[in-house]
Length: 127
Image (cartoon, rainbow, N blue to C red; front, side, top):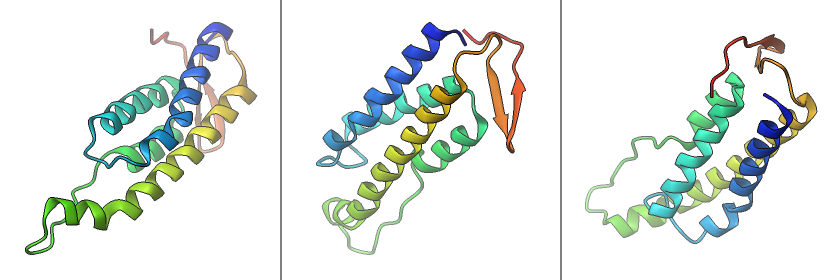
């Protein structure tokens, strides 16, 4: 990843992180949240650091929720609201950590994969 690609990626990640406060009034079924989640996952994958990909998958992919007997959609969304807000704050922390990691690594000629504390070169260009 060259400097220009790194700058574009970190700028995109920062934009996604900065949008989190705008998502708080919404819920996990909102089209705006879904668009943000999809774009965030795309950017995290482009960073190509497996631990961040795993963490973001666990955090941002929807899990099957449950519906209490007789519960309406609005009641379910209200019950899930604290988890939604917590998920957004955890996403903010993950994005901040990823941005800092990318800025510390800087541009690399081949790209890198970080796994289990090891930095490994990636010899294929994934453009």
